[in-house]
Image 1 (cartoon, rainbow, N blue to C red):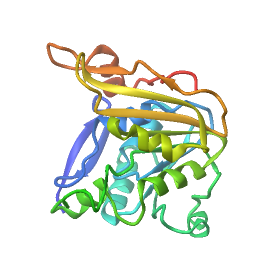
Image 2 (tube, rainbow, N blue to C red):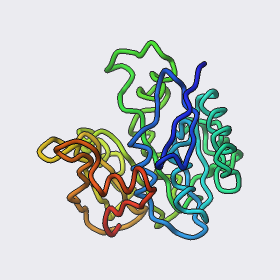
Image 3 (spheres, one colour):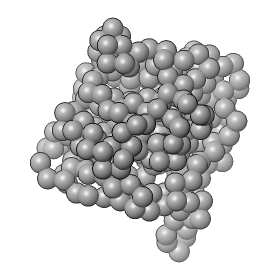
Length: 252
C-alpha cells in the first residue's frame, strides 16, 4: 500500500495516510478541536484511523492521555508510526480492536467501559446494505457499517465514558435525527453544532456533544462557517485548522 505524507495544523503534524481509500481531513481536526481541555484527562478516539484526531488533540492539550481504537491493521500500523514521527508516544497510543468486541475483551486492551473522561468519534457514514461498496477495502470499511450498526456504535461509544464524561461525535448533518435517537437516555446537555461550508449553503457536517447522565436541555448552536464567499477559510476556521485553536461548542 502506498502512503502520502501530509501536514496538519499548519504543518505542525506530519501524517502518513493511504494514498487511496479513506483519508482524514477537516472532520478529524474539527472533532479534536471541539473537545474540552482538562488536565490529566483520559480520552478515547473510537475509529481512530491513522490517528489524526488523536494527534491533533494531543498537540493542543499536552497533558491528556489519548487512546485510539482502530480495526484495520494497516491503519493501526500507520497510526503507530505517526505517533512516533510526531514524538507523541507519551500521550497517544493506538489499540487494534472493534467496538463490536465483548466488553471483557476490550477491557483487556485497556479500553474499558466507563473509564474515559472524554470520548470522540467520527462514525462510518452509511449502512453497508444501503450504498454501493467502494472498490477500495479500506475506504469501504471506513465509510460503511459492517459488523455494527450506527445505533450500536453510539451505544458503545457512550458506554465508554465515565459518569459526567463528555461524548463528541462528528457526522453528516442529515444524520442528526439518528444521532439524537442513538444517544437518547445516555447523554444530556446536548449541543448540536453545524459546520456550514459557506454563508447561505446547507450544513453538511454536524458536531454533537453531550454529557453522560446530564439532564440539561438540548442546545442548537449557531455553528461555524468554514469558507469565505471569496474563497479560502474564514479566520475562525483558519485558526482551528492551521493554528490548532480550540473550538468551543457552548456550555455542555
